[in-house]
View 1 (spheres, rainbow, N blue to C red):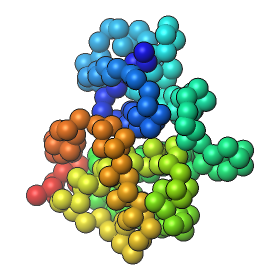
View 2 (cartoon, one colour):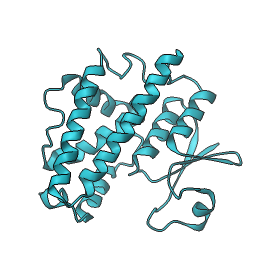
View 3 (spheres, rainbow, N blue to C red):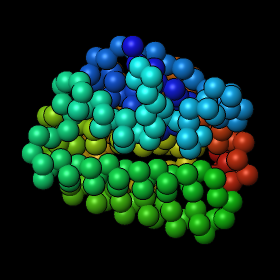
View 4 (cartoon, rainbow, N blue to C red):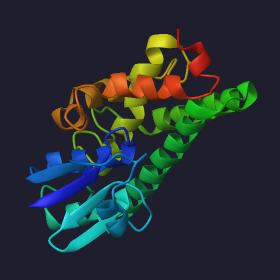
Length: 217
């Protein structure tokens, strides 16, 4: 059985959990406290990060490598079979990772100007996505892909943000709205985090000495 070493506030862990669920792979999940990393975790995590995937006696690290391994070894395929389209999907996966980096600044910066710059950057990136999306419901139409697994945790942040502040990043983007709703309803996405995920994320946000935390009323 595979073991996913995780911390479920981490969006990169969620990618791996979604891919495992989409493929119906039996696995166990072992959570770690990244603020107090146990010795066994330090011994196997080269970068001190999650996710890790234990496969027999081997340990894979980095979410991109993990989901690529899963897609190469287990069906159904989540990557397109056409090499050119597959390469484009990998590019959009990296685009999703860049959005996560922007979100991290939104969550943690204490500088109002830096906050606004990242909000504008997020808006610009979602506008680009609007132009890429078709009839849906998924990124590639009717085929759920690894791009969907990457963006589901991105949208999940806004489920908490939207309770307290309207960042306006999705305004006038109906395709992005529809994609976000479809992903939120997908069982593999719902089950990628614990039932108290939103409460834990909110608690994390409130602990930050950030501009955002000061406006979570």
